[in-house]
Amino acid sequence: MYNSRMTPFEPSPAAAALPVPRRPRRAKARGALISWLAARIVEHLRALALAPGAHITEQALADHFRVSRTPVRMALASLAETGAVEHRPNRGYFVAQPPASLSELDVAPEEDDKLYYRIAEDRLADRIPARVVESELVRKYRVSRARMAAVLSRMAHEGWLERLPGHGWAFQPMLDSVKAYEDGYRFRALIEPAALRHPGFHLPKEAIERCRAIQRDLLLHNERYTDAEVFAIGSAFHETLVGGSGNPFLMDAIRRVNSLRRLLEYRAKRNRGKIAGQFREHLALLDLVEAGKLEKAARLMEKHLDVARKTKAALVARTQAR
Image (cartoon, rainbow, N blue to C red; front, side, top):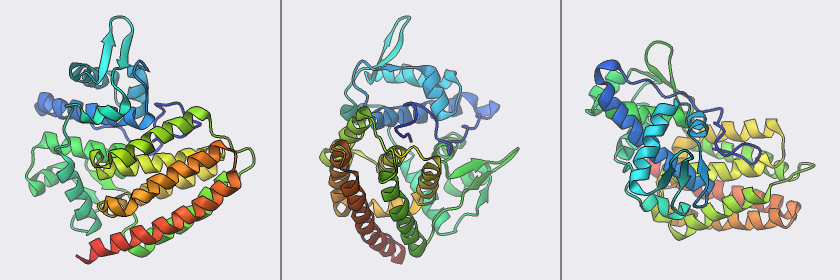
């Protein structure tokens, strides 16, 4: 995720280092990591709405994903083969396709999504403990160690799983009830409008355009996006607006609540028809911010979050009741 005060590839504080594959399975595990990383780079470029010709640096991506430059270099090479990016000798890599078309390219299919969501659901239902060992998960879900390592790496990067020193993994605290989910939205309804009313609020034009491009693409091509992608884009949108306040305490607060609500949010996003209006409101918010109508934007944000709370809480409750 990013905000308007961060460089495009600055890592989120919630990001965790990717685990090093075990030596006996190094080649196989590395292949899974490269595929996972290539898919994440594509998502990242789309979220930033970078235009064709934009320069991509290995070091910036390595910093963002908290990995070394070697897997980034390999992932970029695989993306160059698909046409997503272009390699220019002695100059590095550049975006080759418009961001909206990147998801259509044949790059690292999301074959692990089912496993990812299954683990998420099992954790919400307390069918797996807060602390786990990779080998136990491999046996429970009957998948290869390489595939499990890639999924756990994804969770760690997203900030809801942490590698323990020496051995094992720990799931981070999450909102796990409808009431807690609603309370999270009520908290956001306090801090996000306050950010828009903050003295000196400013959102650069390029940040507004970047957000606008991705929200428009969500409206036009909603089916292209996974639940995780929609969540990441929505969180980045709200964090970008809060970032315009320049207040680090507000930024810490919004990042924290976004991290806590992730798993229940996936459930709410399974009915995209119910939440499409939120993308239109995001565009309306951007228009108001661009026009300098910050009080109107703050009032719209209050309404936006109140409606989202009621709509999504009902969807989450319905899913839990099944």
